[in-house]
Image (tube, rainbow, N blue to C red):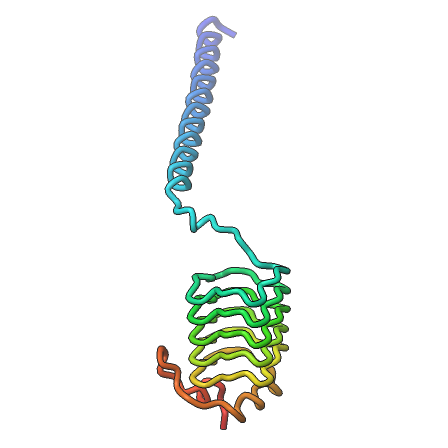
Length: 185
């Protein structure tokens, strides 16, 4: 190997080493910039966006949640006898395995809610919106559904037949007839 080739190989190694250092430095700067941007964005979120309150397994009997924003909240296996949820936003809420005997749900928005295996016996769903809600294995015995909108809701056949026997009215918000939303004949 000549002296000229040895110098070329050494300078080539030096430029490769400098290139790696430069690339590493650029990646560090990019990572720091991304973390700084994320920090600024997360600190700018309103406190409500970080709300993690759920009501799972809670005893909420006789509580007043009228006109409350409960969008996306979880009420799994909650005891909610005689609860007042009139006019509340329960869209995309999870109410599975709940006990809602004699609950007041007048005008409540349950759009997209999961109301699976819930005892709604004696509840009042007057003018409630249940569009796209999943209401499987839910008991609607003695439930008032005047003006309720069940458009695209999932219901058991037996409960659907029972609801059709007493369904009437038109939802004042959506303008949909209760019997039509249930697909009653």
